[in-house]
Figure 1 (cartoon, rainbow, N blue to C red):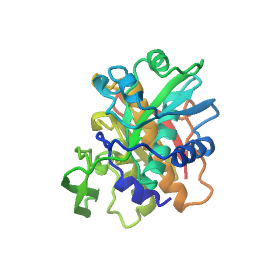
Figure 2: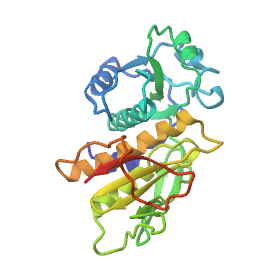
Figure 3: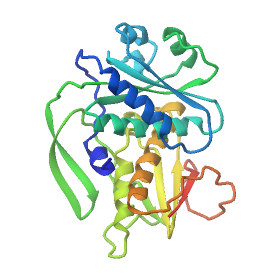
Figure 4: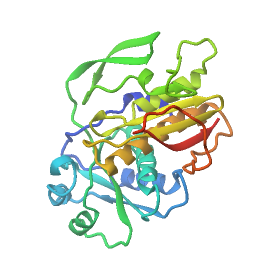
Length: 288
């Protein structure tokens, strides 16, 4: 995969053609999930619901305010319920979403507030929780829209892009150098362009209502990730979006640098004063 190209190209599509996804592609998606990287060791399983009545079954049960977008297929990630399992589900789901994009398929995250009800309507028998859901299929072409791409203060472009466009927070507002008092300087001649691309990729990750409640602090060869909760975005959706941002950042970094480890979700021994606002909590760290 050319991850940055796929990340830039991907849109959350909410309107689909009434065209079934071929079984060979469904099998390829399942195989991809089974070999995909996780954030940590946790039991997961993927199911694809693609029957003619699946969208009707999910209507009013899954999706924002019960809107399941009438997609031809739905990806369901089941997970063992343990610490950070939703972050991991968002991480894995975003990887699959990029795979779907590569396969010519459109997709959109679905809110799932009632795991047991979704399992009931989809006739899923499992002790695991539904951690993430993605509606997907062949998306309808939407009106072209002019989009402002803010890579950095000195790298701004305007492009015509098809699909669902919603404003996102500029990458320059999401990253800091050493602590929250110092914005990351993308124009510094010593700034790492790979880190800049990774931050940009993270800023394009799907986020409920585009709240993007995560922030990055770059401190030498260490990357620290902070998160906050608000009253608009549910905890589940917040954590799924956090995992998606972590996947995009990691994929760009690891595609350019060899030997990059995975994110660490154990930050209990990190005592540095990041001068972070009280509502932002350190949640992950990554060594470059």
